[in-house]
Amino acid sequence: MTEELDLTGQDSDVGSEEVVLTPAELIERLERAWMNEKFAPELLESKSEIVECVMEQLDHMEENLRRAKKGDLKVSIHRMEMERIRYVLSSYLRCRLMKIEKFFPHILEKEKTLHEGELSSLSPEELVFAKQYMANTETYLKNVALKHMPPNLQTVDLLRSVPKPDLDSYVFLRVKERQENILVEPETDEQRDYVIDLEEGSQHLIRYKTIAPLVASGAVQLI
Amino acid sequence: MFCEKAMELVRELHRAPEGQLPAFNEDGLRQVLEEMKALYEQNQSDVNEVKSGGRSDLIPTIKFRHCSLLRNRRCAVAYLYDRLLRIRALRWEYGSILPNALRFHMSAEEMEWFNHYKKSLATYMRSLGGDEGLDITQDMKPPKSLYIEVRCIKDYGEFEVDDGTSVLLKKNSQHFLPRWKCEQLVRQGVLEHVLS
Image (cartoon, chains in turn purple, orange):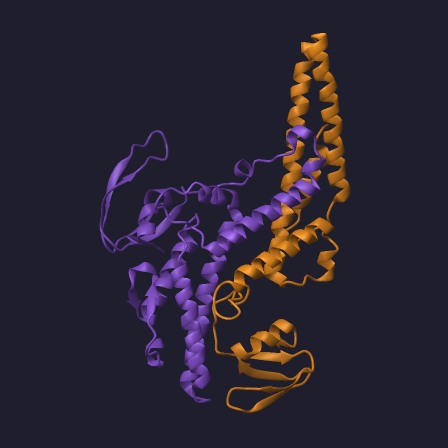
């Protein structure tokens, strides 16, 4: 639907890949990132390029609508489209913020120990937000309680007190690229690990930990 | 028994349904801290007895008091942290300005935490691109319809709609207007969404 608008001369560059996406493809990528983020128990890789491009897209659409003839039926429909896109984008960013707040000590610890070539799961702005959240909470706890406690009890290790994301939780997924020989680890001592193949287009209910790297690579889609 | 007061704090929050913020139990927290101080001082003197007087029979008592100290701390921090989570939820529910009733239930330090959180969130939202960024505390539900039925709660005056015509927003008048035009006014409390 968005292609009907006058979008000549608008190309979306996605990061260093120099891929040019049509608006429809961009929105599809946003929806896929949104669903993955919603259903994954941990914070996924930051997709700032998609966020930036979608924001640009929304601006363009707003521009076009302002220039359009008033009372035109198409205006209402495009408005609706814009509202839907804005909802998906907001929901995606909200989901990320909630996870950042929930697991902040672990996420910040991971940021500190990023290895070569590993991608950050936080955008620069999210990193600032996370650090501020941590500082705010630590300062509060210290001033209200901890500094009034006996000297040997004044520090609380947030890494131990704040729960970690449960990577063993089960997720639904659809396979986009065929995978072979995925090792499924046993849950109990009586079970043994076994190997499965994931056929393209098939759907599964599986422990997140087993397929976490496949979500990151795009080989599976959480549903 | 030790840690009674600390348990009471935790129970108080456990009883409060999700989203509700009971008044800050300053007295309760103070009592927990006082108990911790007393336990610590008793332990200090007993540890000295063990070291100088060889009273190793005191060691179990010392350990027991230490466990109580840890439990007190855990309960106190859990109480404070859970309240912070509830306060955080208030920002998303009510916006940046909290209703007075809730503010009275918050301690001064909690208010300060809330203000820092607000600012942090605002900075983040502004950074999202475009001129003013993106207010992600809006659009909480998927949009269902283009037009919504609204009732006017306060006198507002003339309001221009898309096709050039304007509507007079007088108190208690009802209108069928485009959703995106009304959102701002609904947030400000001028209009009220009528759900039939």
